[in-house]
Image (cartoon, rainbow, N blue to C red; front, top):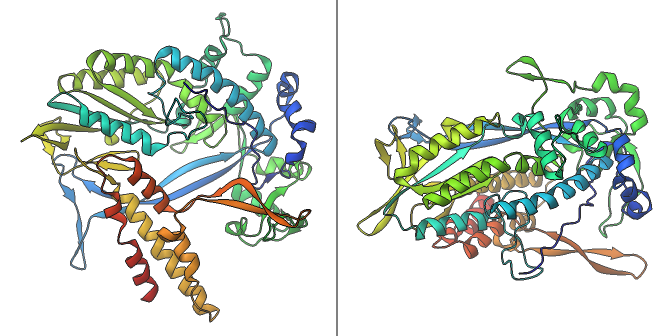
Length: 517
């Protein structure tokens, strides 16, 4: 078996924060010696996170909770089956040095966590935020992604020996926001194999990291932008990838930060002068319009949060996996999304076990998002349907959805919502291009549209940067990662019995039609 290649924890960020970005040339001069020093980290003063609310508009089909029938409304004589709703994600970004500290301690914890997973027989069970090789016997090969994880489950279902069985999808409510701090501390101690004293005690450096990831303070990105928008630090790069002169300039709107090359809102000294005006409380938070004591929740977006979330449910994962192993099924967890495949006769017992065990970790399963699918061989063909009314009613027209893919018992498809989102972005991009071409009395820039929305831009290409000393372009370790079709083509290559290429074959005609109209 090939040795797993370890990820480098040292990754510098370029997003604007409090203080200027770190210089990669300083890694071995002072940054790494500081971050890896237990004494220095134990005394380190963490800066506040910057908070941002990410809003994603989703268009989903609605099904009647009792009958399973597709719901729709008539508008202008047309059936409207997808209703828009907004999904909010609360994201938090650590300062540049703080981010490296979190990354380093995530690296330490993850190494120990990976060993525990092997000991517990959970290496294939927990998939999110981990580097799992596609081929464990090939050194230096690629790692699995959600395409591979979904494909593994679909293959298992196709080979499942029972003529009738259940597949259940669970979703944990607000996973990161509800992690109990005491349970998290205990889990952290377990990973480090800390002696079980009357009260668990973390080493001083780890405790400081734990304290600041649980009792974290933050400033809202809108507030800090409004405070410093007249003098934001910016630095652009030229076409050769070389950094230009550092400037302070006014940026009118927050959405222009990236285009203007913003790298910092202010210095740490400048922030401290207005700290009291901008800082949000660390010991309390607002839940359902009420102020509650913050003894739960960690910031989503921090480099260490994903490792902690995985470790938090270690013993839960083992209990569920052990049960299904004895019954002849599988359990998989991708962050807050859980999936089980089990014999039909064990469905009720399994549901009771999951709901009762998750409560021990002070978490809740969203009943409205728990989907129970029945797979059954009918006339020699595996059929899929979703259960309603406690299994009394089956909608045999409802496909099983997992990690962005649909499965009907035979064929795999891209989730229809993902495909619709791709075409919406394509049409929006064309409309924007038409608007600016008309505004500036220029031809529409088709090449850019083809690169973003067609097969032309789907291939991954390596980035090159200009070396001024040798007057030539040099290969870098970075890539242009393509577009949505890159993902679709990879899925078509990996997935069994898929019809993904059929779903996307009309994209070229649709794109040209939008450009011509």
